[in-house]
Length: 379
Image (cartoon, rainbow, N blue to C red; front, side):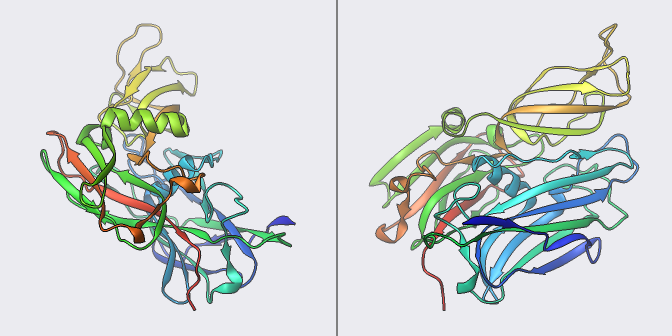
């Protein structure tokens, strides 16, 4: 028994700066996950790194049998999902710097964690498996940030399936991930995010990602509701939700490089925590150690010798430590590793996540994502 990792595509160029790229997957073997890299070149711009490669991957899907969706997620959600599965993101070139190369590695998992032997996609039991990546490398703004710079050179990509060969036992099934509900935020708004009944769920995630807002600002309370208020196992404030996420999944770490200008705000990858940074090039400048609360925090640059706030652009490397990656929080009722804490929604009369928003909530689009356990393949 061994995992086979071989390039299905290597240094292949996307067909255009915006559109759909379809990659045919092998038709046999147990697919544990798909590693893929996107590599491009940033436009010349030293002040507004609002759009990163992960922002420009607007949909990542695995589809079988022509139209059956196995995975459907965007680039930001995939990175957050990886961190919740303790699949640390890695690359030597996650940056948004003037005219510089940039690359990001992603891993799309079909199990509960990296190389899960119990949950994998059996490619021999489906037809026409495909990986579909929808891109917009010309994106200049997203989720309230509007200062990005479009790419002008078409990026390249690698695709590496992780396939288990000579398995000892067959897997139980695979984990499907997709968005199941969304709504528009509002001042003190209350919303019942109804969850489709029938599937077995191993985890749910609430995401609120917006400039100057974010989950830690917009959310007031969250509640898991079963059978129309008969069972409410969880009712937590935003603070309780964040505390439970850190206790269960630990503090997360993300590193990035970009050009920072004064105290201008940027879309930080982790919403709640702290950041520390270094200024490159031997400049007489430093990055102030700062709290990350919501997405209202700018990157403050100061003169090292005198302490004055700087307003010109400097190359920085930042290390973020915190939680809520891209404004996404796991609902802490579930334990994705322990099947005893999964919910069989077919046994429920009703099932929803109730969201109560803060007075600051506005403009954003809260989304609910679900990890669904699939054990039966469709003919």
